[in-house]
Amino acid sequence: MAKFGSLYIGVKPDNDDNALMLQYFKYFCLRRLAFAGLVAFGQDYLVFQVMLMTHLCLFMSAYAIVKKPMEVYLNNLVFIGNELFLLFSSYFILTFSLYVPALQIRYDYGFAYLVIFGLTTAWNITLLMILVIRDIYEVFRLRKVKK
Image (cartoon, rainbow, N blue to C red; front, top):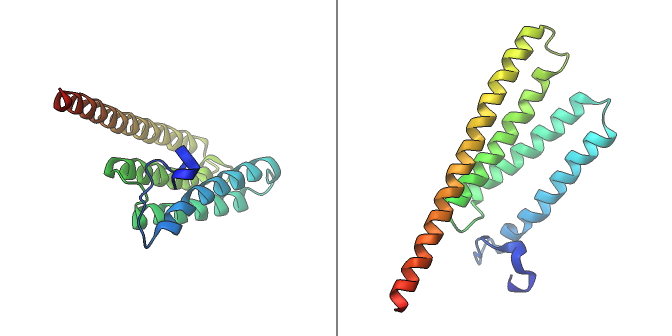
C-alpha cells in the first residue's frame, strides 16, 4: 500500500480482506463514471438512470456497512452516511420527475429533500470538525510528551 501513496490513506490494511478493501477506490471511480455516462448519454432513459443509480448506491452502501473499509470509526460513519444519502437521493429522483403529476407534491418533496440535504451537510461538517480537533489534540499531546 505504501507504494501508491495518498490514494489509500485511511484504508484498513486487513490481511484477510486487504484485496477487497483496496478495491473500494476502483468501484467508487467506476460508479462515478457510470453516473457521468448516464447523465451524458442516457438523458432519454430516466427509469434506467434511476434503477442503475439506485442499485449502484445500494451495493456501495452494503459494502460500507459490512466491510467498514476505513481505519478510523468516524471516517466509516461519514462514508456510510454519505452512501445512504446518495441512496436516498437516487430514490428521490423519481419524485422530481413527471411520474408525480401534482406540482405541489413535487414542491413538498423538494423541500423535504433540501432539509435532509442540509442535515447531511451539517452532519458531515460536524464529524469533520471532530476529526480535525482530535488530530490537533494528538499533535499537541505528542509535542508535550517529547518535551
